[in-house]
Length: 296
Image 1 (cartoon, rainbow, N blue to C red):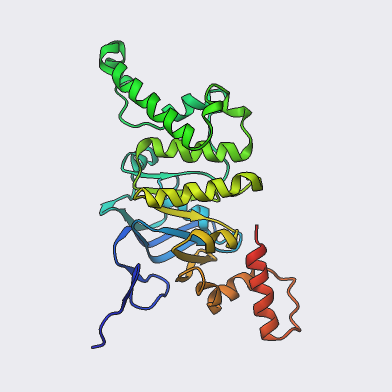
Image 2: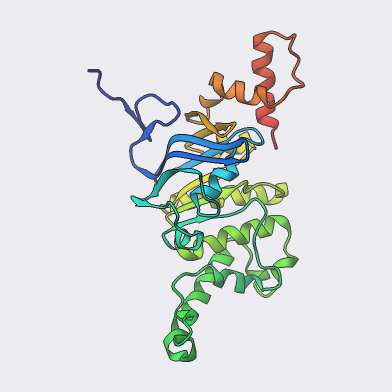
């Protein structure tokens, strides 16, 4: 029997469903259909702990739907998945968040008519003042409220939003809302942060700031799983890449070698029907690599 090779984050050869050395999230046989369309059909996938994993694929690959299933915002037809050893099937989204798995959205979910600071406070968990009867006795929750506000102000300063703390969230730019959503996610001290297209709609001036904050999440001991189309960003910050196409995981690997995988080339080539079918195979590969790099 050949010995099992262990390289970095994974055990054995990099392939769809490869086992990880220390997975924080494991999903098995997760399938979701909408009428006759199969949006997600993931046989097995593991997300490595304390690493940054990118989930990529052409439009319509099922990435956001898979995010929704893992975080309790949608229910699959079949499948099981667990976070840090705890099963998540049929667990409500708010309970998933309390367990330490926080996600952001492609379209930000800030409450526009609340101030930036109040949006941050909403992210804190186990607030004593939220209980009907405890809320009537300020002595029970006042100290915790002060601690929550101090933590919120510290995070806003880190994300360079402290000058906006009293502004309505509706007045923030698209990039600032992305920063607010990420900062608010940290109010609950998560173990795993899932970011759905964190760079979508962000102007170049804030892109580097967001990249640095994502890298800081890992430096602080958190695990990051993000959906992204910008392959330059993926290569810059991701430790591991999972590729989806037509609802399935078709490839896994490090960000530099996964782009050479024929399954990845096929996935992106199949998503662009205007490719010149009279060109050579080499030209096809180069054209698809450019499409992957330019995908926004």
